Length: 407
Image 1: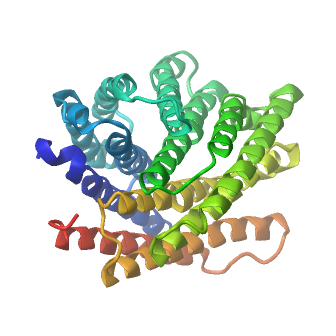
Image 2: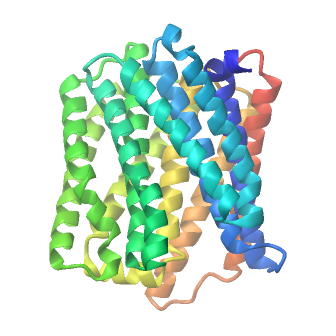
């Protein structure tokens, strides 16, 4: 298994973990419709989120980075294979530890082992990645931001012991999430996508890529201010957060220029083009949401309607942007098959599930905000949308199993 881990199995394993994460999400929605004391909502949420981020998100992303940026002779190094194997084992164990025991000793040990192993992997990537073009810079800074985000995981233990679940506790978690989302995932995924363009000899202006990177990078650290506005901070944080959001908006304009430039050069399938359009729209909505979130009124209402707006934003990022882009990159790398009838149906069902989820979450939030009649049978409809997500991923995964020799 280790011999083919990076070149082949890592993507299928990540996709399988995505399916398990979707199943936990399905159980969460089921528990809303049919409450049961046998199911711990808090434990399920922790299991769902950790497997989604560390299993699906991290493993698939780092797998793409290794395939695209690390020479084959280097990525076959024992250190790469061993650390990836340790990470995979840890995440699979988290599938059981979090739902059964929650954030207790065994889960903490697994997270610690995963963290240390990912450090080794991160430093190996930084050592072996070569070049100075924008895609390489994006990958380098994605690793820097991953290492920065991880500081919060170690600091959190001190915060819990010293201050309990205070504002500092939650802001520490948001520190981790911000630099994981807007640092590691955004930078590494766009870096990988630009590298895919390069490998396919799609001409992209280096100037546009560089300006996209510069504005995005300058905005990343101050954009953390947007994550702490809920905790009654001084107006200074609103100014910093809004400025960072505007810088991200400027970077989005250069991203549009890049996509406009490649549009006529793409020789992709219709499905790949649909995925690209879908993730561009999702990422644009994410950036616009961050600009809007810098206003005090929106902060206040978002907190009051957290189950709708904040959860909707998280799913917008993880499903509509991150997961869609990962599937696109994996497909263009030839590591998953998306050209069969079964996989096409699976992707279509998955995208419908995302749209339903976002419409329900944001729609219900706005209806309550505007004091209109809320969506009836809301929890049942969310359960149905979760079924779409699960079944869509299942069909895509089954396709990979049947076509394993071709991938």
